[in-house]
Length: 66
Image (tube, rainbow, N blue to C red; front, top):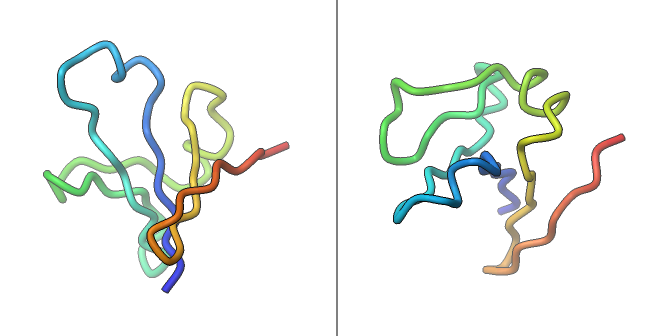
């Protein structure tokens, strides 16, 4: 099963970096550790400060969004 996940570049400065996973049903990237914290899908795709990855078979591949 392929997943789409994102991290915010600025968060890598801290000891823990929140990871967001796209929930296609609701159209939001939802934080894995706090489901109440989320960003609209389009906002993440349009923000250059998010790194977006596909996760498939335990392999992460960074996506280039143009």
